[in-house]
Length: 131
Image (cartoon, rainbow, N blue to C red; front, top):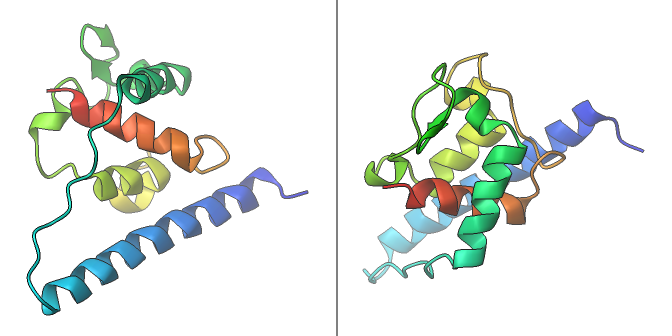
């Protein structure tokens, strides 16, 4: 049975691998024929509700303000979806490995042992829907 630290490292490695693979494929596609980017399907209402629930269950609102609820010790996430720099890939990096992505020890890491990949997609969809 793997301990928590090993699970976190494996989850972080998996997330990094997925991000690097995506970037590599994006770069390879850019060198070939120029195609219009395929839009991701719009998140469902159930997915957004699941993401909102996850933000509460995982303590995001202990530090972050989201809407009219939450703390003020970390950046306000109420309008995160307006800022195009917060791509899904960047949010994955911040959530999975904040020490690397943010260069900060304040935010805890949420490895796959805390938030699985399906749930992480819902959380990111919810955060990006906040406009």
